[in-house]
Image (cartoon, rainbow, N blue to C red; front, side):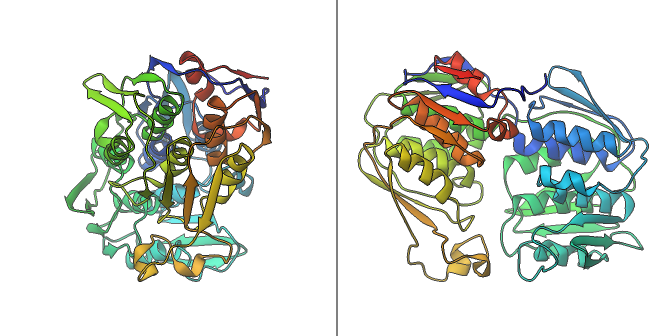
Amino acid sequence: MKLDCEKKTMIIEWWTPLYWSVRLWWAKNASFKLMIAALLWTEKSRLLNLPWISEVWFAMEIINHLGWEAKQIGNNTVSIDPSWIDKREIPAEFWPKSRSWVMYMGMFLAKFGKAKMPLPGGDKIGKRPINRPLECIKQMWAEWQVKDGFLHIQAPNWLVGTTYRFDKNSHTWTEMLIMAAVLAKGKTVLENAAMEPEVDDMINFLNKMWAKIRRRAFRVIEIEGVDKLLGATHAVMPDRNEAVTYACAALLTKGDIILENARHQDLTAFLEKVDEAWGWFEVDDYGIRFFYKNTLRATDIETLPHPWFMTDWQALWAVLMCAADGESIIHERIYPNRFRQYTNILSQMWAKFELFNPEVQNPEKVYNFYMDSVQPEDRHACKIFGNTMFQAGEFHIDDLRAWATTLLAAIAAKGTTKIHNIEQIDRWYEDLDGKLKLMWARIVRI
């Protein structure tokens, strides 16, 4: 199933309560990374339950360009054969299409002992987040230098295990260093490592390939380097972000939906907040049912690394809180500026917000970002004034979170909304509008 790249606009009619039972697609934050992990050795692997999103097609394009083989062999199934290779460097024209280059760095280092990657923002590294994992790479006996906007890394005598502690928790860098360490000499211990379910999905896949990885304690991952790996078959986990999207849409429209394969253990922090906001849900062996009974109550959240409330959920929660009774606050502690784009659009739909920076003690400890990366215009918290009746409009959107929040607001809005630049939503959701139409939403692509 290829993406429909010809239709660029969605038209959403005035809301109706959402009802239906749907199955979630598979985790976008795991899928393309597992494809890259499958390249670590030379035997063929099969990945089941891959979502047909542009990030997956882009990963297939890169793999095939390098001389390996990635091909569709069934519904949402891809075979990856890394048995031979023509090239060991990804051309520069590929990099602007995706931010997945970090994962390729770990794979190239583990497989070939060297990597060349583009450096976002030019030649200055300074105290940006990339500097921290490079410290770990250096401890693993690799050398790096920046030249002409590219990061050049090589391990002349191969990577060697080490112990490294993240000063800031990082999902992406944890996965990259896991990949770098699986073929290293000796043991690598990652402390204050990410606990996200997608990280565990990668660990499970790599262990099927005969890697030796285990969680030893809270936020501690131990990787014992091996001499070789095998191919494996693995089914990707369900997408928890998609689950939250549909849950918020159901509660926002006063509907009643069932997410058949949703895993409650991946959504604990979200479910706790739904309960606090007087939303209703039922957990059973079929998945999770979300349904509306009462007027929603304004409920504050703080974003933190898993197992707490995920930063990717806060924009969706903001739409829900616009319809709740009262004022609520979202405190974003993972990224310095994640409000402005989507709040600007929602404000045009009559939502009311106040962005501000809360007073905190020891901000370097409170926030998961580095304070020297904060810009003067950044705001880390948002007050939401509830009881909004969204109004329709026409919008050109180039940001994923703004796209998802506008679509949710449009489903609950009075009038007809047009949203352009569909390719943004197709990067990370497979057939989002198709699923919503199954739930009786009135959406068409043109």
